[in-house]
Image 1 (spheres, rainbow, N blue to C red):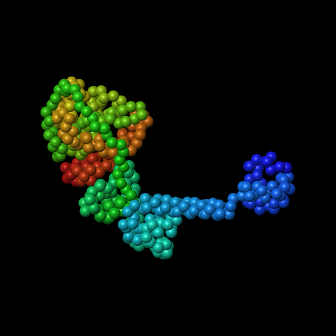
Image 2: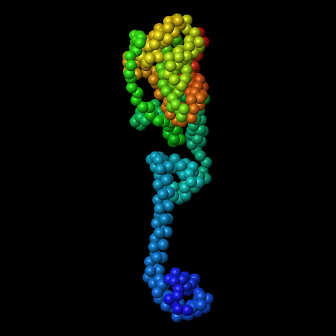
Image 3: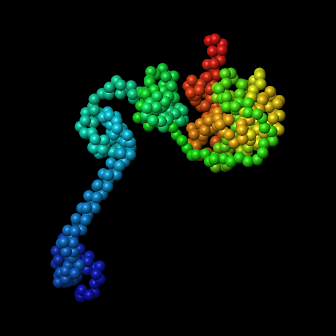
Length: 396
């Protein structure tokens, strides 16, 4: 057979049988039905020089080395991201981090990044924990439990170190004190910080706008005097909105300034005048006030209409209104809306209005009123504060 009858691809495959697979030239020639001279000729034409083979092998070794280095650097980067601030802590804290993450990363790699020796870590692992470390573990579990029961909204504030050691996680410390735990604010702050406990915050609210003219305007008798010494003296009310895939769900609440308790609420898909009236009706039905109560609101159309004014007159309620566009005049109810959205609504996406309605109901009636602690109430929930003050009046 003439060599001109074969394609270059066939010739390269023939040469590969000799150069790469190690078959003798005569055996390849007999199998393919060509002369040995053709095989030798094709070798000169298509065989890679030894220098090229060496370069290719060197490139392959370099690629393998680079892949190993990339894997090592990637692992070290992941360790550093996960071990944020651990390098600033003591050796026992670093050992605890290694023990917690040794199933994710190689122990030697973590030790290298945290500047500790593996033998020291394994020696620490064999030794029993000190009584203080065991107590830290136990109280950390209690703090995490209190944090989760709060809906993961109790966290530490972003304050300078000299300030936050006293103020941070006061609520978490107070929860532990309720359980009979003896723990200082600094210790609660340290354990919560090491456990990664922080407040959960969702999307931000878009700024609103104001327009239109109110029908009836009342004087601002509240005048930002938000601390009252008896229940059912001043109620504050307002309306906010909640996003759902079906559209907005509007929420109206009535809050007693005495304890910051939500005593009335109503939710609807439209902001009709009936929305705040239903919330106020619930408040009247729940509290049954025997004297006049001042009801403070903004100058929204729902509060300046004749239906609202007529309801107030029929139930011995006195209107009070903020100055137009001044949210500070009604800061207590604005603060409640901020808590509701930060601690519950902005951390979720509701498919339907009914789903949002159930979640808001759960927040108000099963968390905020009976459980959520307020600094103004002496770290008591609104219901607990009212019960405490009632017992004091009875001399118990």
